[in-house]
Length: 250
Image 1 (cartoon, rainbow, N blue to C red):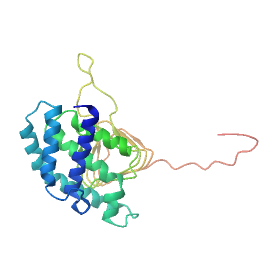
Image 2 (image 1 turned 90 degrees about the vertical axis):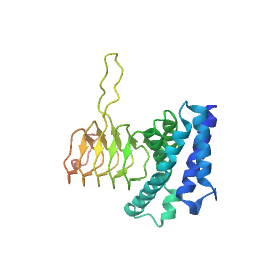
Image 3 (image 1 turned 180 degrees about the horizontal axis):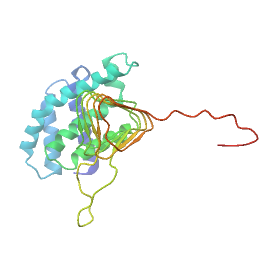
Image 4 (image 1 turned 90 degrees about the horizontal axis):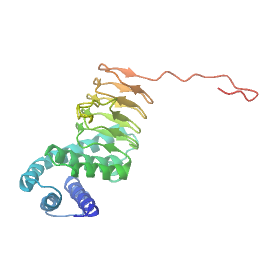
């Protein structure tokens, strides 16, 4: 199967999952779960040498959980953004809905041991929205981001419940360890954010550090160490400089 055909089928799969999640706006009015099974079966049959029936059954067993998680993500936006006027607005207009449809689908397939397809799914979302979430990352319920553009979440990141991220946040690796052949090792290297953490725009949290629950991390912070619960990590206030004269600069 051609790469372009795979991408289109993946988009179709996510569209069907969207219909199953938000039936009020569904384009497929009946038998949507049958269509999901058929599209996923076709993808697996043409792309991977796997036990197709086992994987499809495993995914369908997770579908209700995926749907429930997506509803919590939509609710989190409604609860955290005062600009939201309705749940329908979040579903139809906010990039979070698109990103999390792709991510939660991709994560379920990743957990079932499927290679490549999960990465393709999250890269489609990345190209659509500018939000880059690796399918292996673990994200709890009621996840919310505002605006979103430039958010990066690495493969071994762990995010708890009721976490809010703003645009430009990076949950990345600080460095890599290499095996005896000089190949980077796939070991835990990204942050853990506990429940009720908020991270403001353009902040980078790097390495296998733990950000304790109910913590707020301000904007434009470079953070590479553990933070205890109930912390407030803020930038030093800007200095007010006198007016410059005669062409003098900083």
